[in-house]
Image (cartoon, rainbow, N blue to C red; front, side):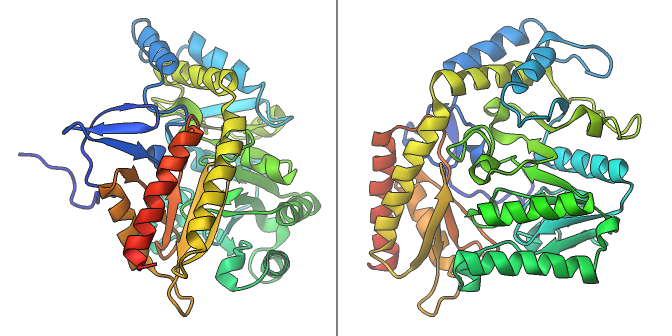
Length: 418
């Protein structure tokens, strides 16, 4: 009898029968508040009727139209619709299936367009599990261990993770930018550097937001040295942070944007967006793929955009995000076990630390597991896996946030004795 790989460790014991909105129902009929959203994927909630209907209708027309062989209407319509929400000037799209594929496509484009070999990534960033993307990932060694030698040409600069350094944000930002300049002097010369990759909020790295000064510093250095600024919006895009794009919080202009996760409400679809001029600098044949731009996924993505706009989900993410982070901070204030609560919109992380300020993965894991038993599904993240993250669907309402905070407060009190 075949079995799943033993390396696929489940974060919760739940075996799902069906989902609806912010809830998952297990095979025994128990209801769970899903504050994982499939790691930020089910942005419109589980089985939103409009998305389901769009996918069902498309399945009856065309499931797969390989997009370097034929064109199909959902692909063309999605491209037109994305033109209304993409950052100004980014008017050319390439579609793939997963976030890792989008990262590798952006890497390929950056190297070919600039004819430079090196890229810079941020300490604590996550960009995927394929070899190039794993090389660019520094949120944990588990993503790249045992597959070396890794890809050459990837260099790491600090991210302004103030709590980790024990500094205020301004000090951490000045340090990060100074070290980036030092990297240019000691490791990768600017004229050898094709791109800087950055997440507006570190995802797997612990839900750490960037800031305006840092992002402006990256943009200024990119402009000065002819380097491309690649903003990884795979987890932060499509309203997740309370603005349509995570980088909108920081008033920065990207050269390439990476999209996936919440784009199609659970159907596999990813992509990169750049200007026509930049995209044209890639080599012929360097973009393609069997399943990229799948017709059903594209139909679901169109419906997802419609739901986000019709139901004001970006605004809802901002409002419910403030409610969630404020409530989580009230809970954290009652226990020294949580050193910091942070996030943007509906990306909220609670970092667990010991009495002497060291990462406390054991208590974070105990809290996450206890929450699951109590009907609230959460995940952990961070280099030490000591951050419990809340990433509910964008359709979550105030009452559901209150329910989650009530459960979370009881969980934290029980596992910390506070």
